[in-house]
Image (cartoon, rainbow, N blue to C red; front, side, top):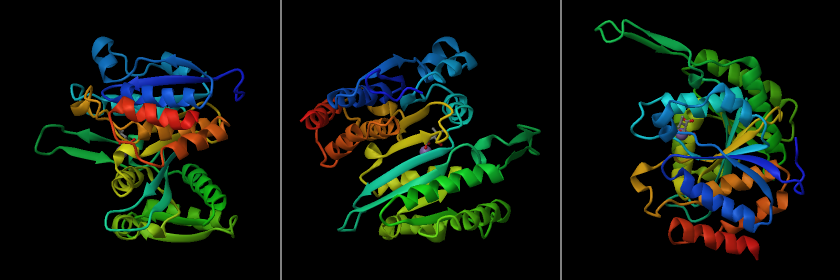
Length: 336
Ligand code: IPM
Ligand code: MN
C-alpha cells in the first residue's frame, strides 16, 4: 500500500446523500490546507444513485474500492428508499466485505451538568453481532408471523476486537479499558466476550480493566463520563452508546468515526457518526467538524501524523457560521 505523501495517497470519496457531500467538501478543503496531497476519486453512491439506476454497491465497484488506500464517506441514505437497502447494501457491505472490524469513535467534551471536560474512545465491533444478518421471517403478514434476528459472535471476531482495544488502551496515558455488555442476560454471547476479555487482559498487565452492563453504562455516560478511557463493546451496543457519546460530548455534529481494517488487507473507511440529515440539506446548517475529525483519523491512519494533529487542534475551539464558513475557518487555522 502506498503511504508516501509524495506520490499522494489514493483516497476514494463517497459524498453520498443529503449533507454528506457538503461536509466532505469541507473536510477535503481542510486536508488541502494542511498541505497533504491526496489523489482523489469520487464515487457516486447512496440513495440518490440507487433511485437513479439501481446500483447500491456492486461487487465490481467494491473491487475498485479495494484498490484505494482509504475511503472518505459523508453520509448515505434518503427517506425515499426503504429502510435497510442502503444501510445493509452499502454501509454494512463495505464494513463486512472490506473487513473493517473496528469502529473507533472518540469523544471529547463537557457533559451537560459537568464543569470539567472528558475524553474517551469507544471501540465498537463492526462486523458481527446483531448486524450480521442472521435470522429470518416465517408466515410474514399473518397473525402467526415469526421474526428472528440473532447475534453472531465468533471467538476470532471478538478476540481481534478486544485485542485492538487493549493495544489502544496500553498506548494511552490512563491505560484503562472497560468492557460493556449485558452478560447478566445475554449469557452466551456475554460469556464469550467476558472470557475473551479476561484472557487477552493477561497479555496487558499494564492496562486496568472494568466491566459495565450496557444499561448502567448509559447512566455513567451522562452522570460520570470521566470514569472512561477506552470502552470495548459489541456492534449494536456500540451503535447506541456512540450516539449517546455524541450527545454528551458536544453533539452529533462533532462525532467522528473510523471503520478500520487494522490488518491493512484493504482500505479503511472514515465517516462522521451522523447521517444524511435531509431536513437541513442546502441550508448551510450542517456542522462539518465530524467529517473533518474523521478526515484527521484518515490522515493519521495513512501515516500523516503531523497533519492529523493539526486538524484536531484546529477543531478544538468551536467555530460559528455556515458549513462552508466553519470549514474555511478551520482550513485557515490549519494552514497557519
Ligand atoms: C452508524 C449508523 C449505521 C449503523 C447505520 C446507518 C447502518 O447508525 O454508523 O452508527 O447502525 O452502524
Ligand atoms: Mn449509529
